[in-house]
Length: 389
Image (cartoon, rainbow, N blue to C red; front, side):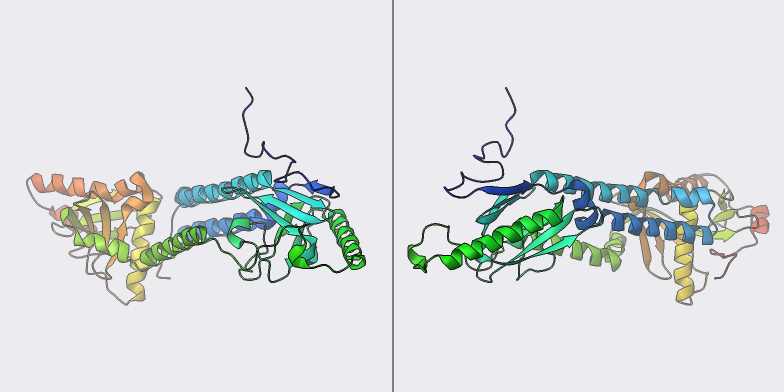
């Protein structure tokens, strides 16, 4: 038994019904996947954008003193996001190309398109004012159709087969078609022939003329789809503003902390970083040179913020385990809070282990040794920078 596809029940491919007597097909074609991907989804531009972000991310990490391998590994998350974004755009372009079928007859243009919702739009020559051609370097092109203002299609349902950003002047577009110049000539000839025939015919009462379906009047946005689109846009904007304002992470401090440790971090000659418990003065750990790029990057980010606010280094940083299980890095001096869950379990563990070490030290007998204090030379130290830029 052969599988049934969405458009198998079409009486004529690309058309919702049989052609009336006297109407014939002049051309049929689909969108080209490569043309949609490059000129409509702008995959090349998106790839360049992410490449620039990755290069900037690595450059800033190297400037902060990270080793190249740490800088690259710290950019893996951004690289994965870039691959996912480009993959989704390519997939949508492929699905959109497969769903389209454009038909030009001697009386109308028919567009069948839509990925989630299949839509067939009839554009009788009687409502077409003009058609514009735009050619691409690969020989494909777009033909946009201008209709009279009383006959407007839905921007949402036709996207991306519409001219962008024309919400109230919707122009359907035959996108990414092969041999677009030849197709445009076919359409121009058909429109000219139709106009000549219409001029030769006697004027009749439009109310009694049933030869062509009456065009739908007015501009339509289809309220359910418009509401869904508005909700998505609102959610994206709201989440972005929430995150950018740091309120999302700041609210974490409202939770009770199950464990916490206050730490100072001191850069040593050679690139090592000494981690010191601010309460006991004990050396908790020494981070070896050219290792743990995430820890170094996070601390330097907080230190830059302190310098920008002219805040000294007397106040230690705080690592806390909250009641919800999240691990946060808090700078009491600036109020900055970093939810370490967002960076994955490996990077979270870079700071979470200090809680375990501190807890073991509290159980063990004795306090900080004089040798430790002499070695670090601190009674109250914070993260210092070898480069003050």
